[in-house]
Image 1 (tube, rainbow, N blue to C red):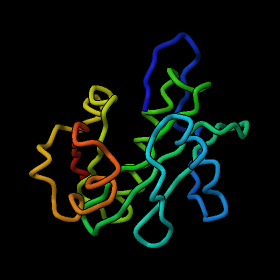
Image 2 (image 1 turned 60 degrees about the horizontal axis):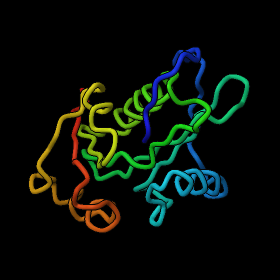
Image 3 (image 1 turned 45 degrees about the vertical axis):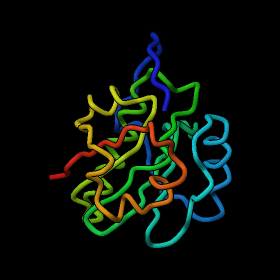
Image 4 (image 1 turned 90 degrees about the vertical axis):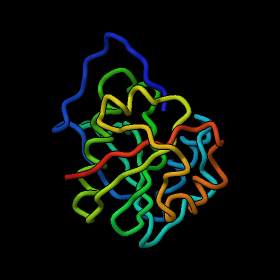
Length: 160
């Protein structure tokens, strides 16, 4: 995820709607991830995966996120803010709403891999984790084991 600063008006959480994507709606997510050079090869459907779109009150697409669920752990996936909405607080809203959904799904710990947004995620309460300390479920995920480079930082946040 790319985070930039600008003087555009910021968004309030109440002005952003979150919707779970169905299999027929995955095309726009895949296209957006490809445009940003983010992994999109293993975006599965089913009980283990949840992908979300986020829209402004006028219907404009703001971005996407996903969760790969492993009982009490989850891998935060596919977080992307559409270019025209960057620098307006939308990334923070997307992460906050995704973590709220994870909590409702019974997740206690959310992990992520990033090469570019460590500081952004630290500001949202994520901490660095040594890759060797990842739980087996996360370490065996395709995202961790194959798709993300070994230089990607593993981060974790506990949910209350």
